[in-house]
Image (cartoon, rainbow, N blue to C red; front, side):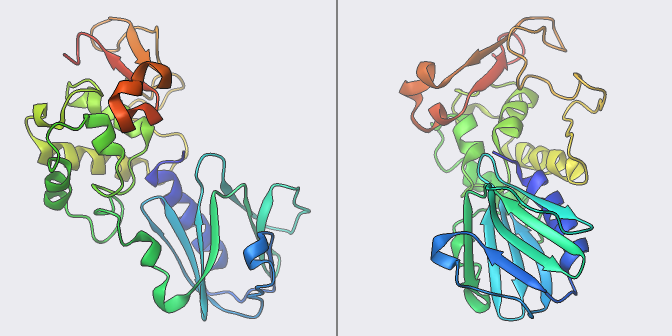
Length: 260
């Protein structure tokens, strides 16, 4: 599932392509909204909220969530989309196609934020509040840290990559209780720093090294040497994590020595 920085970057690209323009085509390929046509409407703004994306026109709002496979693609000249397209927007020669979107709905403009009212502070949004995010994280002290970081009600934008990397940064295993984190505020601030520094690029890095194969500390590196101590990185998949409840939704990675 895309992280908050990916959604923010996607929104920025759509904003540059569509904001301030009038839609000349609106083809929605989701049965519930297939008859909706926003052609002729002005695109006022494009915003992201956590992992959610909103394209706001003069009368409505296109709400999408990428989920696991979704993406938006902007073309300088219209192309013929394939069967995976869920929505096609055009503004003159500019074309934006949303493919395999996990969520796509058309909402009234005046209440389009209702689907995201449950979200915690947005790591890349104007409402970011590290103190509130830290307070949210420690509300359930015995909850596994990895699960607490992934819970969008605590802070909005962290996905599985960042959750694993943040656990490494603070020296705690993904299964460790939140109560073992010595400085929750620093953790919240580091989460924001990671996403903020990666918001304008597709190939994120948490190590500070952008060279291929050197961008991440532990995520996706099972069986490889830890960059700090050389211990082999371990991982646990869903079958091995059933006893951990929500944590079982994502694969986890850790260094046995660096994350006691």
